[in-house]
Length: 148
Image (tube, rainbow, N blue to C red):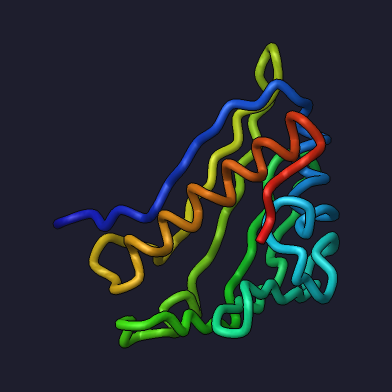
């Protein structure tokens, strides 16, 4: 049986798991997008992130394990970019952030379950993740990210 690869990205940070957890639960507008509405720091909270008028994601917080794990379920999404036929591919996907304490900081692993090479937006979406994970890294390390 063939295993389907979900998108994964891992970064190493010099900050504590507590700082990383806080960035993922209370400080999303500082690294992902300033166009943030809702709440993201309790289980079952819902929030919407927007990237201009044509792209948004509405997410429910599925699981929070303090300083260890954050799980988001994408309830609604629109990626209205030219040439993309299926603009709702994120709906029903799950975003898992795993936080691992290391001797000199934290390892943060992102797994986007359902974001797989055969879906249409894969190339655009992994570029987006790389950009915003870099912004998250900058934010956690320096206090200043590069959100949309």
